[in-house]
Length: 188
Image (cartoon, rainbow, N blue to C red; front, side):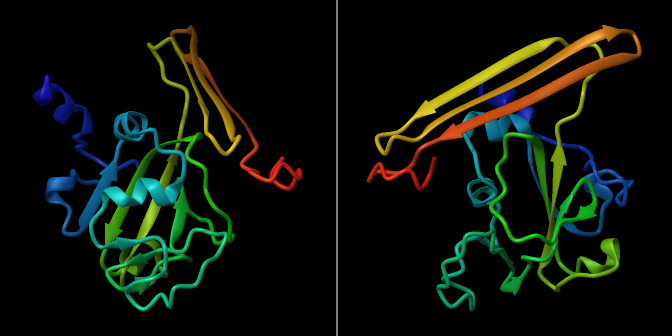
């Protein structure tokens, strides 16, 4: 059983079109967090997902972060700021916000100079988020619900339907409400 779980987490290639070789032949340290791991751990934020990767700090307190508390994903890889080195399907996403993981199926963290693959970046590395896409030959539907004692409710759904041999459709949805323990409507 444990060997089967380990093989679910193993990835041979990254989704990025910029790296065409197998991971074992890539002269770069790349960590891949799979959809199985994201689901098994119940991960809902990028910060939580990156706790699986050594050398990545997401809270900004250590490694020269100064302890600043921000509302966006503040990443440090190997001691260098990587906040502006976040990509979605290989396209740079420089906006400052907290990324929810409901629509991503894989997180790829490359360590070291990211400019060799992206043309620009820091010395620490880069993060590539791989969005969910329709899958041929598979029909599935998944739903997850969580309710916390701080009155936060979260419901997510993921449905993939094969229409014919060449066409599939996938729909992902998220509803989130609450988190306001004072019940003053700020988080609704």
